[in-house]
Amino acid sequence: MPSANFGGDPSAELFEKILSCETADAVSETLLEPMVEALGARSGVFMQIFSSPYGDRHFGARSYVGSKPTSVDVYVDGLYALDPVIRPVMDWLDDERGPAPSLLTGSFERDLEEDPQYRDTFLRPYDIGHVVAVAMPMRTGLETQLACVGFHRRHGDIAFLPEQLSWFQRLVPAIRSVLYALACKEALALSETIAIAAREAGTEMGFLILDEDLVVRNGNAKGMEDLGLTGGAQGGSSVLGEIKARLLAADRAPGVSFSFKASGLRTFDVEVRNFETADGRNFHLVVTSGGGPRHAIGDACRRFGLTERETEIARQIASGKCNASLSHELGISLRTGENHLRSIYRKVGVSSRTQLVSRLLHIQ
Image (tube, rainbow, N blue to C red; front, side, top):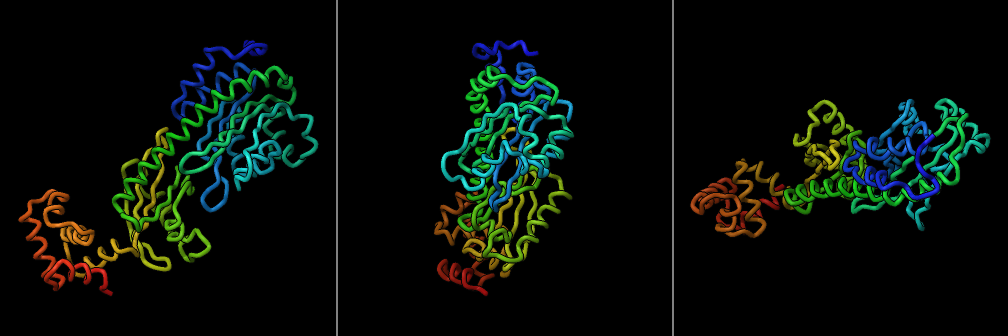
């Protein structure tokens, strides 16, 4: 049995241990293991759950301490939908209407007979008879997710006592602060990566973010439409399949990227960038672009045979930059910039900036 004093507050040492958690990989050591020992539990689990941009549920980071780790895989593969304990919180995650329900539950062995399917397919095979768990809704700038932490005892064990549940509840604010900090770190890494891509691609950028399991974690309207993940677009889902196939066959290490031209209702460019989240997981930013002025100019420059440097100068001119500004922006001398511009005029068949921009934007 645990040595914790359930009549009083949790120890400062336990609070310090929990609050030392800085990455998802450290959740087992800093949160689950000390709590399993203190509660006299047989196992402990942490799960991150969210709704994807197109409406289904997905499990992100997860950790487990105990003798039956395969129970987590079975649970997230679909049996979670049968779980009567977490179902109300899952339902809230899908539509976020009203205040988020709080979940703090103790033993439910006496209720097993009321849900024989869940009992026979999950609880009995993995010898789970008593649970104390908490589900914490968390909103970041990019998404809403649930962070769930639970501890289990076997069927023949003594149920968690009321004083143990009260003791556990006093730890919930510390657990919540740690898991919320992890969620914010992840959101910050995603935001920084998106901001860099947006600065480079301009206003016509669509994006999706795929996690380490290649599940869509986030995206904007244009990215969803480009890849056929909205009702208004057709034929794009095959592009997402191609992206996943390319990722599975490629180096998925952070910093690696690749690009290709895709075709849905129209042809557009796809770039995939691998990056590392704050807690060390490998995610993928998918950038779609095409159809806007910036990319129309790029297509026209290719047709006229402009070099990469000349194409960049043409884009700078289209954005209103003078010779001095574009030379400074590109790190070249004013004379070199003027030489490039004369070459561009000759290839496109124009004699002024206005004619150049007009010709590039209207070429068919």
